[in-house]
Length: 400
Image 1 (spheres, rainbow, N blue to C red):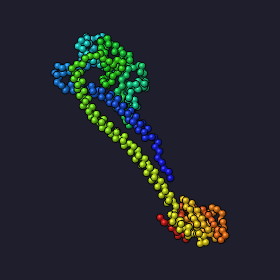
Image 2: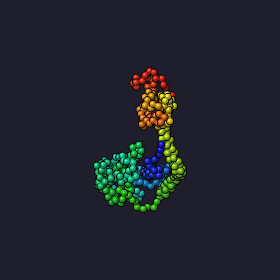
Image 3: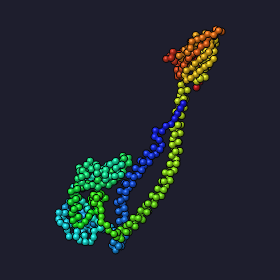
Image 4: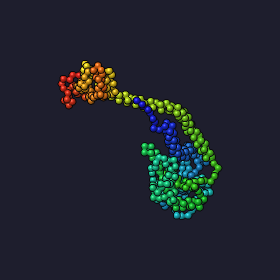
């Protein structure tokens, strides 16, 4: 018996494919983490600054104000949002000209401007499901499929997209998509440009984290950092060090575990090979056991053969190969051997395998082939089952 083991995929190829899959998932996870951490990084320094007394923040000018131009259905409003307060600077009809408050705000120095579009029908927002592989490049993927998720094409609108959650069970990522017609946004950008402002972000109050400003317009003139920016930078650096230290420790542990895993991989493959080899051998053993139990024991067959052979015949050799038995011997009357053998329930299909020859002493040399009867048929014949034509006088038994 020849038993072999052949792997369908070479271990090195399987390991390489698994590593590429892991790296792809890690890159996708890092991109999603970066998109999710961005709002938190902006929010956390503001929260830390909010813990300081208001007098300190005003004296040190901590927490640079954010100016928001909110465009609603019937009015426009300019707001100054600080760390812990929001002040309405001006409110006017959007169809009117430039209010005087805008000139005052320009004179006081605007740190940054956010254009917030809240008029009904200006921005279309919806959540869509994309394949999880699209998380690596959401902007490009959404740009290709924009006409499938909205009534517009990428040439008609500006859009912003933000990941919300990953659904590993379905292999999808849920993202929030917001679109605004190019004519609407370009009109407002041209208007604020005339006022001397360049918006840093274009968003909506429904989801302030979305940014619909085109990528080529997302730039700001260089300004020297103020005290608030320096303090915020220090806080962010300390916070990143605090957060990065456990990740560094986990990375070192992960590297050591991967090195140990690589060293154990050949042993694991060998164990798997031996386990499959053992299963194959166990299956072969059971097959042989079932095969052996299919026919009567060899001792019973030999005892039965000795009982049915006549006294004038003896055997010179006996060959057994599975159910096939070959008898070689001599007899004074070989012609009657077949009848004697067929009288036993243990044997069937008895026949001469070669012509009978007679020697000078008058002995006939014979070669007889016969087959063993299966165990269940022998039991039925011995017990006298009518279906097999047996008689009640049979008393032979088969040893277990």
